[in-house]
Amino acid sequence: MRFAESLGVSVKEVEDLIDVLMGRITNFIAEEDIDERHFQNSRDLLANIDSKDSMYVAVAMEFDTMLWTVDKKLSHGLLREDVHITIDTATMRALIRQE
Image (tube, rainbow, N blue to C red; front, side):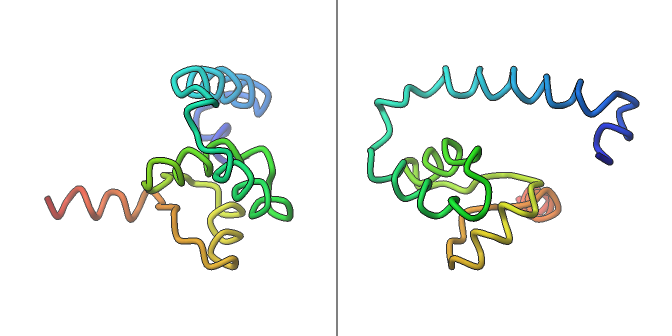
């Protein structure tokens, strides 16, 4: 994983950090606050992409917002399904510079 290499840490350390962050994010927004249709939609969309991202996609759908991600598999998979809810870092930087 290039990200781990760039930080000078192991892939396991990055995965552990991601698990901690995911736990904090999912504790910030209660699942019961998200409409079940968004969970079902995200599970259906991600069945052949990456089901572990369904919570994030459901949150983006619930709040009608973009999902900032560097996960190309997720972004490209959603685009193939004609779902335009992801934004990458380069695009985010460009938007920030415009303001």
